[in-house]
Image (cartoon, rainbow, N blue to C red):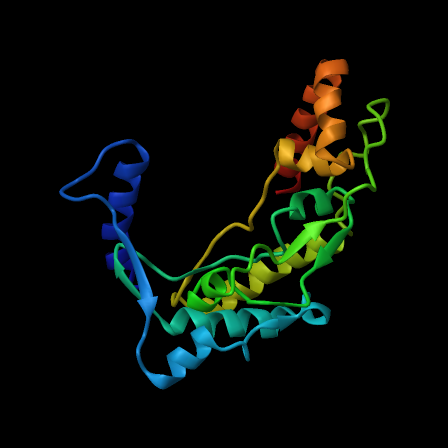
Length: 217
């Protein structure tokens, strides 16, 4: 996207974010391009990623670029890639184990993603709490050696180099809230009991987890 066009588009989104609008509501429209190559990229699975390739930076982002290129963006829409290891990746940053789908798209967009009802790229392994109790909250920190943390940063750096203004790079899908704390405690049931029996500690751990994200960034 050309810089001058983005400056115009950005104004609409800034006004919308502040409960205002200028002239028109920012309307996002995306659709498959109708040429054969684009149709194949969007409705086929030859660009999808195998579970064993989940850390394959170059392949994933180049395949994502092909899907973005095959998509028409209208209104105030624009192509955007974000690294996606699944909605529980923040919990993985803090030590939770993850399971991945056998096959998943390289970017969470496009008709094939919607048509195939792909719920998630991955999910946390429940029943294996990282936080067994609230006696030691010091482990709620992002370890710089954590593979998911390292790969998230690597994906973003590579995407920036590859994009050359062709598409935007967004933040990964982070759920650093009670969703994450439920994973770290091993189940939503455990967290629900915590909120009744140990409310102050559970709330404190939630705050510490958020702080760990800020310090990591």
